[in-house]
Image (cartoon, helix red, strand yellow):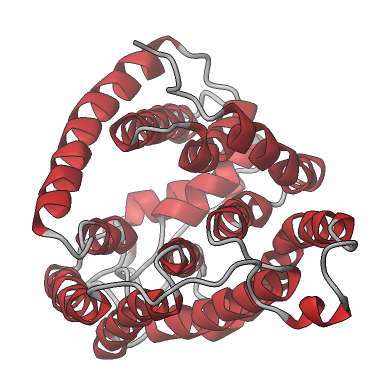
Length: 364
């Protein structure tokens, strides 16, 4: 039943190339390292599945970086964000004109650009989004290095078979253009455009989940699209339920959050069956978020002095604006603003009462 369920080869090689980024995050305590893990795994998948040469790996990294800067900056303006998401989806489908297997490169360009851009926007902490994107860019570029070095080393081993001119090749194989990519581009534009418009209209949080769900079922074939939609439904229902149940029994330690973040990225290469991979991804995400909420609750209730939890709590939950940086009427409630302030942490509360600017004393 379980024979062939786990792809040992891809999982082991992906874990080895992800390890330097994970270790850098642990040593520095900088959460940006954990955010860019999705870039490392995406570049690894594109290189393996699309048979990219070293030059192709570097070009893929460049496109991801440019797309990331563009989509992150577009989050400031809802209309531009919709257009940018549609253009990105169409471009990632159009790349299959270079070969059927190039769909992997298109998919794993769309995913890191979208997810990292939304994560950066959610954690901008009042900074201008272009500035926040530029600050994250060095981490993004560094996260590609393990994959690029492995690609160069493995390509070097084939030196007897390839002459020097092959170093200027983008791929190691030649393919005929994919079929039906024109229809796929139209379908992707419609589905992603509607999803992005819905996000802007209703101000839905974590837009990357909805947009990618809309884009991922565009397979170019009705039967496979329906099958993938069913797999995602089953994976989400079973995975989230399982993750919430498992999260009850797991200890709430800071390291668990980081390990689950890396494990979520590795589910993209760990399994041979999509429904199992998506279910595992949903389960780990639900477990991680439950652990985060438990530690956040302990912080708000004053039962922890975990400074890392405090930083994550401030970064994720107390922005006086919506997903697109537009101010929300009144901002966060006053009590929450006080709790999220640096001095509200155990041992750092100042003496006396703290009054909000422009607030009458009668409201305190």
